[in-house]
Length: 427
Image (cartoon, rainbow, N blue to C red; front, side, top):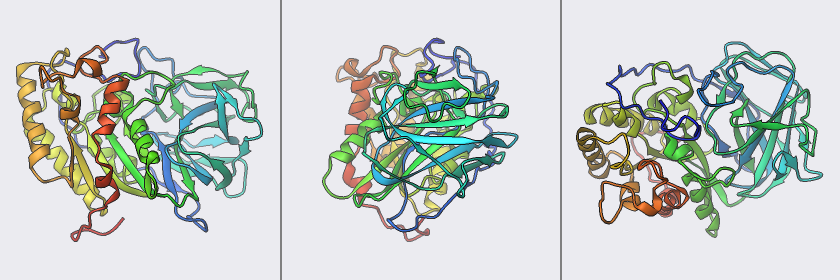
């Protein structure tokens, strides 16, 4: 169940008996496309973790029924800038090829409207149309385009033939758009209507900034994905982290949000595919599959506690996650779980699990460093509850101020001083 069925961007926790802990792997999507070429390496400046297309309770996203002769216009907030961009189309969970006949990128003016003169048609191997194979992602050719950090792009994708269920990201805290027919080159946006999800696009890479050394991936559930933040305002904790990084002088990093609302670390949620595969089964794709990944911040596990998973099983999940990231020579930083007393999820038994898990994150030494989100958001009067000024009202999800406090808790020096690992190859 959802916390509030009408609030599609919020984390879901079910106060029910434990479910089976399945660690089944999801087939990995592979990204095809051009190499870096001249102008420096690519860095992922925006990304969204994908789920299988399905009907979503209380959500008007058409991904379950699919698209035919329609254009999706995705609004994407990019964390870093450059003078070349490429877009990654997604058919990650599709069971049939998706034929794409027109894709454009533009700077957003407002809503579905583009900044005049910025629309660019994208090509794929020099062609304006392409087919994305089932289970695959596909990069566009690079396009020269001056993109400022912390700006928003419109990426419009027209599909003529029926797609079947569409790979998507369901909970976005961002209004997106869909139109009948091919409206990819429409700068005004007047033919578009609202849709709540991102569809057919899973990433934006930038190149050409001497400052951007790579990307940090923030990985987790809805507290990373959207929390209960103001819509269309880019108030997620990774957005605030991107602002902090861009405020620096000199070398910095882009940020990718690999959060999924309702996601669990150690198991998928049976019968609820819109919450995605387990965190440990998606790490290779959603974190290590990002261009230029330099670090990962993991903050996930509260949903597992809500399903009565034991501290031992959650910690085993962390160890598996860490091993996968370290195998690619990438550092991973552990984020403590936010206080949750006062939420409907809380019980004394779950509180004990939370305490054990956070103590392990802080003191085990298994992570390359720790971001103490719990301490940064806890109430001074009750450290087991969210600070009232940071509480969105459900005792579980931070509001805009709370996500800013989370971002402020990240030691930027930790991210920018990459520890050398002697036991694994450099990614």
